[in-house]
Structure formats: C-alpha cells, structure tokens
Amino acid sequence: MMLDVAFCHWAFICTILFTSVILVSLTTIRYTSSSGERRIRVHTAAAPVVTDLGEMYRQADTGAIVSVLARIAVENSLSDKLDSVRQQLQLKLVKSLKEYRNLYVVQHRIGGRLIYPESLRYLPLYILALCKSLALRGGYADVSLDERCAAGFSMMILPARRLLNFIYPSLYRLDEVLTVEPDMIDGALKRLPLTLQCLDTAGLYLLDDGFTFLVWLGRMLQPELMNDILGVSLSNFPDLSKIQLRECDNNHSRNFMAVQRALRERDSSCYQLPRVVRQGEQPREGFLLLSNLVEDQMAGTSSYMDWILQIHRQTQSS
Image 1: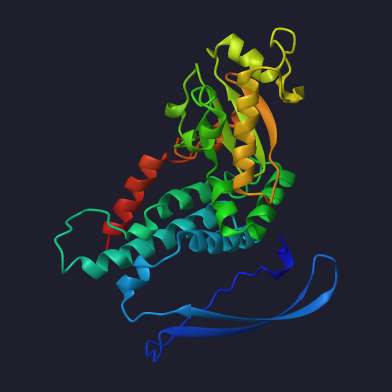
Image 2: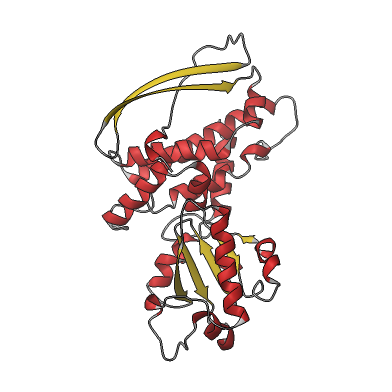
C-alpha cells in the first residue's frame, strides 16, 4: 500500500447553482514523502452532485465520512484537549442528524423519533468508537504516549475499510465454528456486537482489529478444547503472553488455523499476529479486550444505548 499517495481533501462549496451532474476538483499538493523527498502531486477528482439535500444524505459514504472525521480529530488532538476533540465529533454528528430531521419534520409526522438515512445507520456507532479509540479516549495520562501516537498514526494512514475495523474490531465466537467442515468455516463466521453480554464464559472468541488476532478463552471453556488449541496444558504454562500458537495434530487446531487463514485472506494487506488472553487475567484482559468493547460503559464513557439517547435529546433541541 502506497501511503504517500493517499490524501484527505476537505473542501467547502459556497454556491448552489450547479450546471452539471458532476463537480471536478483539481488539487496540487507540495509535500515531503516518508523517505524525505520533496514532491509535487496533482490530483483531479470528479464527484457526483445533486440539487436535493435529502438525496445527498441517502448517497452518503459512512466509511469516507468516518475516515475524514478521524483524521481531523487526530490532528486537533495535537493542539487541543481530548475532551474538546470528542465533543467536536459529537457536535458534528448531532448537527448532521438534526439537519436531516429538519428536511422531513414538516412533510412527515415523525414526532420525537430519531431519524437518519439508511446510508448513515452506523454513523453514530462509529463516532462513539472514534471517541473511545486508543488515540482519543480518556485524558493524556490514561494511555501511554507511545500507544496513543501509534494509534493516531494508524488512523491517519489507514484506508476507510481498515479504519472502520480498527476502531470497531470484528468479534467472532469460534468454539461453535470449529466443529464444522473446513470448507464451510468462512461462511460460518458471524460478527458479534462489541459488548460483554456477547461473551459466554464457556466460549472461545477471536477479536480482529486488522493488526492482531486476540484469542479470548472463557473461564469455563472445556479443558480438552483449550489444550487442543494451545498445544499445551495451562497448568504447565500459566503465562499466556508467551504462548505461540501453531497447528497441532487434531481437528480443533486445524480448524482454528483455517479460521485465521480465512480472515487473513479477506484482506491481504496485513498479517495479524495472534495473542492469547484468558477471562479474569488482569491487567491484560482489560487492556486487550475489555477496552475494545465499544458498546459497553467503561472508564466514565457512555454505553451505546446511553450515547444514542444523548444524541436523540440533542437532535430534538432547538
């Protein structure tokens, strides 16, 4: 992936008199590449335009919107308070939903409902995930500087699809998948919401953020299945941070490796390294898994339900 040719373009259109169905933008950028070379790049883009604001909302690209907002938020975090950056994200979300509501409040009897186009149905969730991301969460002392900078750098360069998976990782339950035929594994993988309610103490789960495969072992997981996956007995290997997963001579292990291969084949731009954590193993469980459960309340932040209620109240206010 050539990171030096990816730029975020933010433009304001001050006129509403469009004479064509496309808008052409010509941008010239002078910059320093990652190798220290001075370069000039000319970029011409053509974007479709419409005269109906409602149609623009219906054609909105959630991935592109979140990608732009993430980059702006990371840049603002360098010179502003993190709490202020998170409030700006929330304000942009409320403003967009309020404007969409005002388009139809007279024509339709929408009452006090929160309405949004189908294209933006996941936008509130992704904005919440941005606010809880490693780069923007808490205060400056809540996350180490190296980790915050690394997360912010990743958010600045990742393409839209990988960025969405980075801020809202994919969670899968595997103990039920490992019993199916190998050629049916990919279709059997179902994403779960990032909430503690989806974690069964007798289950085996995998969290994929695009960089790491986090394998979570429930406290009540069958010892036979656990030993087949790890290749060792936990009684003889208490430090899970040093375990290196490899394919063992049993069906559970072979199917487990097939799951990892199937997920890696979906995006070959990276190779996720597996890490293992067991339920109740602190502080590793809290940092590696629980902090990624975006829809739960944690460390003074709102749950997804409380977040939606808060957004709903703000969109109703005048």
